[in-house]
Image 1 (cartoon, helix red, strand yellow):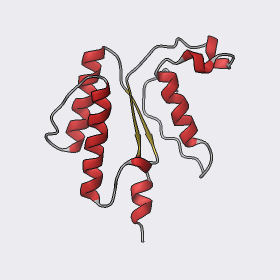
Image 2: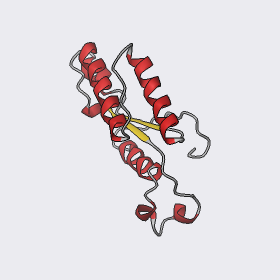
Image 3: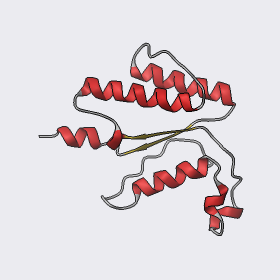
Length: 128
């Protein structure tokens, strides 16, 4: 899963460790080998640092579609600013997200890892 570089969707029951898995993958892709000392993966993986964008929809404001859109723009901007990449918030959200990833890849000469947690939170909060 880690080495193939394609999309994965992990669907598990509530309280089944999805957020812990996302947090673990985040640290793994950030190259934090010291966190994995003594574990199986320590000697089986080259700990290389990748730019990681993580989106936890539990922490992104989603009162209505407009505020969700603005919250995502802000989250993307804040994360790419951590890598000293600055983009104007122009165009639609999809275009901005794509430009952010391409800008990070071009600047850092690395593939970008995107991790998403609690993707269903805005939907569940507005059902019924």
